[in-house]
Length: 436
Image (cartoon, rainbow, N blue to C red):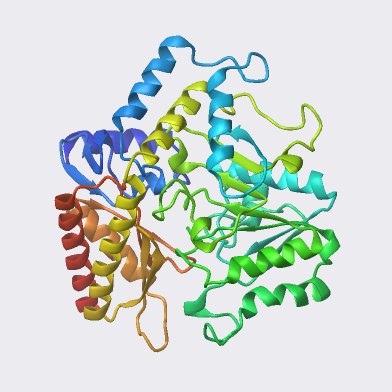
């Protein structure tokens, strides 16, 4: 192992808890676009994007300028004590671009988990109901309510209970592993219709404040709900006065080739949550929703010391400016088409790939030991991630079985970088395939 990395690993082991996990043993020195350079000078092509945070690329020039300009003016006053224009400007912008043909309001927090916590608080206040429904395979964060909503025990929930009460869970629209043993479209969206029975057997509809759904289920395996699913869930929510919270924390800000993944589904959430790529690495999250819902809680009921920090707001405004530039989202969509075509080719060649799925450039491959049995190949996925790292590509696995390889490369990745990274990913998959 290189000298500087080894020294830092020793310091890390002595001073940082092991529970704060690391995918790779790398320490970054600098990054730009889709390339990282470690402390020993080795370059890596980034197919992880800081777990979906760097859609506009590492250290995008406009974002860096915005951060520096704001830091020269003022860094923090706490919006609750002394207000500032960047908070208002960013709220105005998100109210405009977030899906939904209705008046909106936005508040800010620091992380995706905080966005989830606040979305739940607001929905409960509006409806005066206690229950929240989440999906199997969901990931909504690591704070208490967010962790309670998350649908995976290890490592997120194991021994961290008891969990928040009044959290209920329904099957995810996971067509590759349909919980109802049906096939789309002959299934008639049984996973959505199941809600009606659930209200009879498990929790009364008039006790449910909100249903929270990721338009593309991220950490759970890049699961894309089938056409019509979100629309049907929205209809059921409207029927019973339930708030639909769309968690766009990973799928938003251009990740799917549109500003928000829900645009592909033609559905607007009553509350939409944004984070990750909103700040391009500066911590910020947004809770955007119907004005009447957002404005319901009493004065002082929402907020936090750092929420909507001015530097973070200026960074987010710069990110949105980049995303709104001519052809940026079109180029992102084209990247998605290119990635999909290449992954589909790999799936034709390699039986280890059970399914390629996703939306736009937010794509993944589910690895299996056998295509007929669909036995998850979690160990194989770990080996692929390790082999890619050894050859200079940072990639990530996900899914409840740890058997899904996902692509979260910055949307500004160069063709040469993408092709090199894909070649390494392909060779890694082939090697693992041959060893099985």
